[in-house]
Image (cartoon, rainbow, N blue to C red; front, top):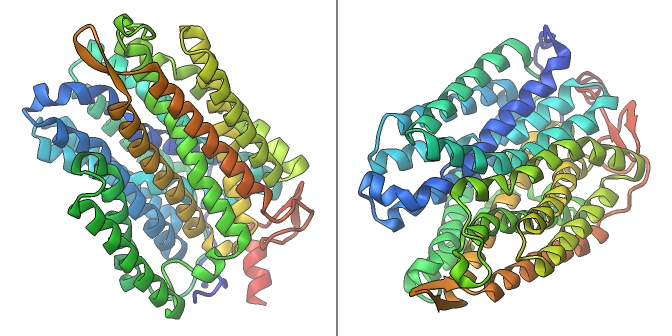
Amino acid sequence: MSSAIPAPAPAPAASPHPRAVVPVLAFCGMVVAVMQTLVVPLLPHVPDLTGASPGAAGWLVTITLLTGAVFTPVLGRVGDMYGKRRVLLASLGVLTAGSALCAVSSDIGVLITGRALQGAALAVIPLGISIIRDELPAERVLSSIALMSSTLGIGAAIGLPVAAVVIENFDWHTMFWASAALGLLDLLLVLWIVPESAVRSRGSFDVLGTLGLTGSLVGLLLAITQGADWGWTSARTLGLLGASVVVGVLWGRYELRARSPMVDLRVSARPAVLLTNVAALLIGFAFYANSLVTGQMVQEPTSTGYGLGASIVVSGLCLLPGGLAMVALSPVSARISAARGPRTALALAAVVMAVGYVVRFFTSHSLWLIVAGATVVASGTAIAYSALPALVMRAVPVSETAAANGLNTLMRSVGQACCSAVVAAVLAHVTFVADGRTAPTLHAYLLIFLIAAGAALAALGATLFLPSDRPGAGATRGPGRTGGTVTVSASATAARESA
């Protein structure tokens, strides 16, 4: 079991511009999050542009999900052990390299490789949250981690319309050149602004634990994302699911015996951590349904009786107000967490998301009402994504912040993968023939809204079973207090725990 005592490290150099640390980290998180949805508007055109099959084109999204899920908890753990800024820079370097690779080629194999590298950089978000916890004064921590965590949703919402505009007006390689330029800018800003944290966890890197986690995650996510194409009862799908379970059980037994485990399962099994991760998975599911179906729904032809025949650009812009609402609401979420506790904020967020889907259920024929419903869901997502890391950090040792938030981000990704599979299955099977083509019925979209609302309500149920928000609750006690959550600076923690 890994020790919560920070390893000795030299005091970090102070940032030359300390107030710029959070904006720089948030900008990095937003750029990384944009990569998750960057190619979605391009997917229908990839077979014509590259000569690839539609199945191969789909891997441009699937591969980022796989590499993001695997590398996020792994690099979070590496950052806790060897330096968060160092791993942050490496992640941004990988993103830049992947973007450049996609920019210079039209070969589907090269594009998939580049997208894999882009996905691996998702670890930037939990690393940024951990740096914020280590470096900022206690009174600024909640609002800063709220913004950093929300970048995962903000970037995803902004990425769709921006990519659609680029694809409509420029050569499609331009968006990858722009991604590479943004990645390079992030690297330079981090080198200039962000200091290295002195908080480290002791122990050796758990190679076997990393391989076991990777094997289990890859099997699970491949089965989820490809099950619709392979058949849910096919030998390949069931075999991968079975192998994932077996490897996961063996991995868990090994991790419980390891001196320095990849994931501290004893900490992760605490109700405060376990239920937060369950809620994260369900919130990720509910959030992603909003992103997946909004654009497709408004693009459906008017011959379907409900579609609006909108262009790619218009469909992408439908999500932009939601992205802006997430920017505006992240500090509001921090204030709710400070005044009432992050558990209350997460419960409120789940209710708002469920209400948003109820609005969407009854207002699916008007563009402006569709945008309004999507924005309500995004608003709830902003509050949820801001509250989740606060719940994680009050329940784990300060030296395991990046790894714990990496696992929480992983659970959101698993929720998104499950949502993608459910949405694909519903839209593929609840169909009718309209104007000579097969299209999803309106009831298919309404069913998705009900399923997503159910996921949000299930997240509410998990949240209500969390330990109550009370002053001093959680594992992160120290001299700084913000509302119901007690935070502690790196230097104070190191001094206390070393003593």
